Image (cartoon, rainbow, N blue to C red):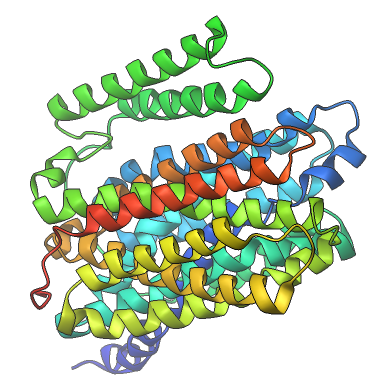
Length: 461
């Protein structure tokens, strides 16, 4: 062995030891920004009074739509150009877009940079998990997915509370400033990773990607605008039907294109298809529940944004603990207990909320235990669906499978937020909030049913 090779070996080994934290850091940033801006709309409206509140909520929706639409093509791209390269480009663009969001002088600029941020996050998710799994021995992959899932679950759950604290203390621009030093640190560490070769082939279908993004955006806009229009309004029906047609065309094109935007051939695996269905329903419940909680605290319990944020924090820790524990257990007990069991825990929290949601503040006797319970369920389902999807394909398709599975969850999240906006009018009553909690509970119940066909047998590497 040459002296150059001898010197390079320890450096490569150190770089590989950094992979779990690099993967967790990327998914943490991507999932954090999916929920951290939930409480920023009032502060944004104070800075941009000419903008409508419904228009400002597109800062949240645009990120979710671009994130969802580009996850699957990004997974294919990671397999093509190499996980290391896509990781670096994704983290770099995300960091730059975060800085641009923080400096945005107008609402249109903010929305545009927020969309770029969502696109970059879509690249980070499949690249990070592919980076993790390709450098992890088969017998340790379930545990590695647990760590990766825990970072995402913690970020999604703590996002509203962290966002509330930052908005209250430093204003909405701080939500994006905090990404910059973290992104730079991840990018610097990623530069030390050994180069990974990509596969041969062409870039994913651009037209199919545009059709998917346009369809998802049209459906989300149609559902959101029912607050100002109505379900029978011609504009609403046009958006819903048009969006469905565009998504259908994206699926049709993906079934025939040699390098599709959506690798729907993966759905021929029964386990993978079931994991995607559970992810979609889980995302629908997850994102609407997280946003609804902070809205209820600030509206009905008269909590400040800061207090509401802190009150929503405990569930993030049980979500993280549950994700790590289920990651370690999945290899022995399979994924069904994580998916169906976790979703049923969420259903239990939803039933408790529907039966006992108090109009007056009861933090220690109601809000805290419900938050800890639902956080546990979220952590379990996050790990279960990610494990089922990733471990149902061969290693060369890790990134594509991860992208498609996370796409399902983000599409569900976009739908959930849109339904929340439709069901929760201005001046919402206690009953309006319980209607949305019922929707979240039913969605979680659907995820539990979707997870039942998943095998209880020992996960195969």
